[in-house]
Image: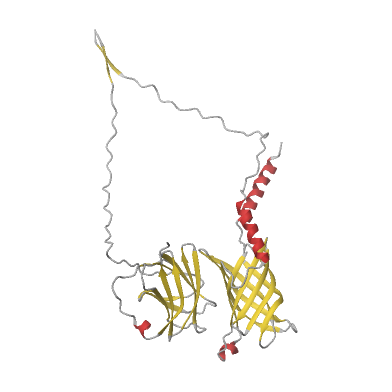
Length: 384
């Protein structure tokens, strides 16, 4: 017979395996930017923000990666990398090993070591922290700075073979059923004795005897009347009236387009309005999440939807400002306008907008100033 301690060990091993199944896995595509902390670059108006994409395939606590760093035509680099994840603290170490592709006009190439913190808000996942860098020519210091990455479904380049292989493995593992450890049938299972059922005493009837006949009278029990509180009448909502919920941080606000014209707010009339993206969706219900696209530097924004204020002077952070919108089918697109209330500590005002429409997901990086608003156009078209 298997000792009790072995049975307990089997259960613990199973529970531990279940925990590993739900452990954090960084496998996928992460996109964002990094920027230097060198003050002289910003002093002379140099935009030190570089875009970055990282493809990760994690195995256990370690992972294989490839990084893409780019900035218009000034610089492009691809590097092989490795890293690790601490499942308890959610701290991530990403280290570039060597550059495999490089295009740059001036200077020397550098490789980075990134110290990141993983976080998750709803369905959104983030890596944010700092980096140090080293010159590949003479191993001298290349400077340090901040880095911000956001998990995305698609790559801007092509998916690396090692990532495709890992994602296929994950899909196959999800299809396998998880079975608990087998129980040894030879073991005697001690079960408590059955509890005796409590039986009601036999019912008696009241009989009234006469000399000639026997009459039986049955007493019929009736349930006492139960008083119920009067049901409140549901408030009737007039479907013809436009209803708007006021915006509160970290809550969803549902806005419907008004059927009557609105006066253009002054901040939309006096600043230039630049269309940064047009999105056509097949689902009328969309969810917007707005984050600070980079270092948290006290940027604040207001958001207008079809000229109506839906978010007022909200501070951008790594926590989403969430807004739910209903799009009506119309020949004219709906306008979402992002207005910079200030430029934060590091101008300009930058934000990341993610859009969910059914199964579709979109990303828009927005830059706005005190002279220019950023506009995103939405159009709803019913699927055929």
